Image (cartoon, rainbow, N blue to C red; front, side, top):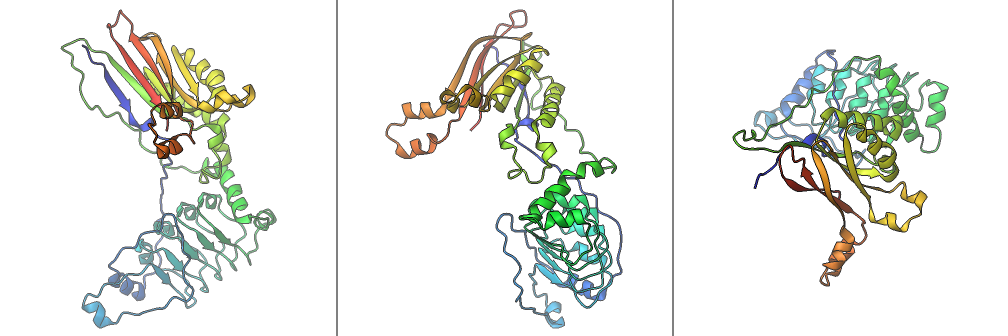
Length: 397
């Protein structure tokens, strides 16, 4: 029996992927002997807490390592640094301490913050209060690990729109700055920090168009095996893509995306452009809204020589016609010039579980709360190409 050879493009098997390209500045501040000593002392590494956030302890104790201990190679493990004493400039060596999770720079005389601060990508706490800072570098928005950013009592009149990218920020201190009234109005509202960050993020697009940024390199295909040219071969390509249903594209789940980028009318054009650019023979899509399948995907792809099969999740059977339009499901499309549809089938996993549970209550409790489905099509290659049929499935759990 002849075996089909399939080419998969793994880049589509994902819900959402965000790639951030960061360019840091090249400004250099004056060096200091104290910072050089710190660099010599530091030997360990300290990672950023990815989920749980514990604020720095204000009663933290300081221990200064003696020169004898340093000479004897005593290990030093620390993740916080405080610089005080009316400092006017910062050593460029500071930006090499990428292990830091907290940086205290309050009560100094700093008038600017170098863009190289973005190199401290593990920072979750940054205190720049009570300085003389008039502007902030746009690169500060790349420090997406930040949970607290204190900017109180400075000379800030405006904020860079890039601050809106700090989607994990919980505390933003802005008191005592001569900020514009529109910023102050947002900041003083209930949940003002989140509202202000959303405003900055939504308005970032206009400034981004004026900035030349480096684009990610094109992703290339990886050939796992060369086709056997000595015998008849059914060579076709398969594409798998989770399109992210509109009702799941919420600001709560994707806080790092501006609202206009989450809007379905904006996303669907880019999704279709990506699908068509690959020109795959078989396309499997997940999280396709019922109404969008019939009014958008099927219409657009039929014009390009595809036919399709779609099934919504199980709960659609118990809903009204209007409610059913917004239930998502799985879809399979195939090129009609290569394939003929022989059979199609929907698999409802909760029904399958009931029929095969064999008294396993734990398994039923786990499966019955969900209404995931799978779809399958039996396709037959056109006889003028090669006589062969195969089963193709698509599921989303």
